[in-house]
Length: 246
Image 1 (tube, rainbow, N blue to C red):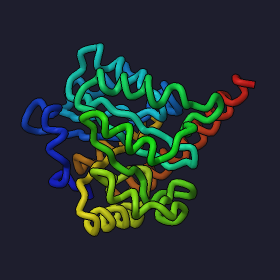
Image 2: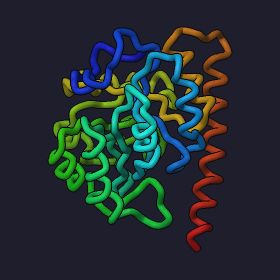
Image 3: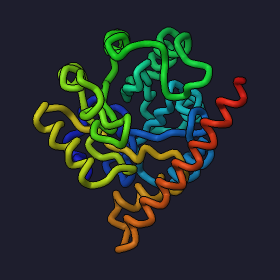
Image 4: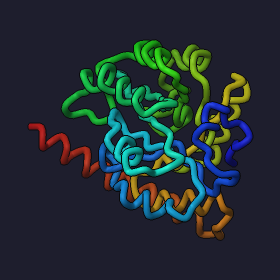
């Protein structure tokens, strides 16, 4: 269930139009570890009232490219990875602030062979993001394996007091895991964000169908198959990136 009534007014300036059939604040492209290109996004969204943010891992190339193409309803954003694997979704009111934040605080600290991590800590990014008109959300707080911060980050409840929102629906996760995220959001009295966390095109389409109640009994089976395909594709891309640097 998407908590659209819990979206912050921070995003109001990007909401051109009164109805939005596709809201997605967590998308990955081929600028980081995704397989989605910006041309696909522009074509898919051209007749679809939307609000999106491309939040690549430690990269802003696709977000900036969409902005410079004249695309509307695009929130400047990035998914920043910390040295221990913790991640933040950070959104900005201005594209110039996203670019400045990236140049000063992300690019100098990127690993050559770790797409989703940097050499900085979570407290560093909390501090630096607040120098801008920004909005910070914790993604997949009850995710899988190392992305289940409730299980493997003993400082998680300290961080929840310092962010603006918690991602309460991630399309790659199960109902149970998203329910846990929603429960945490309510207990901490935070805003909500939600997104596809898409890395392949079919995940974008699947999340669109979910938002518009355009699915049948086989929907969740296909959703899981798409995510499996995404994992396989991402493993290959991460491996290729690693080998290219050695």
